[in-house]
Length: 465
Image (cartoon, rainbow, N blue to C red):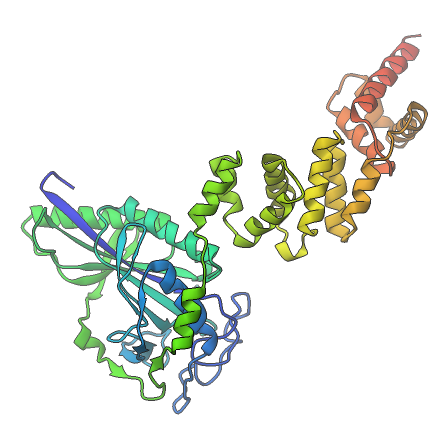
């Protein structure tokens, strides 16, 4: 903005809660299912189908309130928000507007206005010449977090949204996969002279990419600045991001346009004293606290961030640390050998066993290449990691056994051996791999490489004679 202008930005963040069932019916939530598999008369909007509140949703929603510092309301109500959209078969969305689940709060330096539960709509699948409607996610539980217009630029707004996503994923309240609609946000933008009342609010709808949101917010601020310089009035409207610019879709509805009505089929949600006590007893470790602890152990910023991308892996590492004093080495083995293999924490070796494995590699000076290969084989075939460690501790093979294995590899690959002797040094690693793959016991890689060089020299000398 110029010296006498400012932008005021507020966010409406829609977070898919990590539940197995939808908000108002028993349909399963499965992002990988074919279109329109997990639907019923309720979430498909059939006349006469009655919603019921899924109690599974309440606990993660209340935990989110505690993280955000929002005050849970003793009584909240569900309402019908009417609007027309092809992916909203009922013609209305069940949400909370006038009596939300939580009011107020502050997180990351930004004030929260309210936090409310609502159902998701379906999605449009665009295809050549036609579009289809998929209702699998219709009725999925969303937590809408509405901020005050406290943010001043696109980068700050998306940095805040990134941090919020990371914190809620860390707490296990959402999976946070933006490509699957687990987190979307609307950006509300007003511009005007510094200190003046806010101008007309323009809303950018349904952004599901931080990169796109930054670009769209920047473009909209610039558009409003240009319009104001030209003496044009900023219209209160909804816009979308298309072709690297924002484009008006409709005039912004006011509250009366949505014709809010109390949902007659869902009783008010009343929080009991027991629920309040359970919420107060819940202790949440902020992600930033774990990041600071990991960096204090010597991990780099990138390593700590990567470990804390998933709470389950961060907890796995913490458990493994009890058996391994080498924090940085353990973190790198966890990141590369386990997380890098796209393994789920539940399928990883017991953390104590894994920590002991890494400690033995460091303390006993075991061959790291062989240790990595043994670990990969153990993970692939679900073998005992302790047996793999025992194999690594066996004495290295003597020269006679190594020489025999090398000669066998040369006989199996005569052309490759001929090219190696002729000077194609890249084939040296090929033969080292062939030898090590045929020997079940520990191989000293330095000695094996030395023997290959000696054999090459011998073969070249024999050829010269």
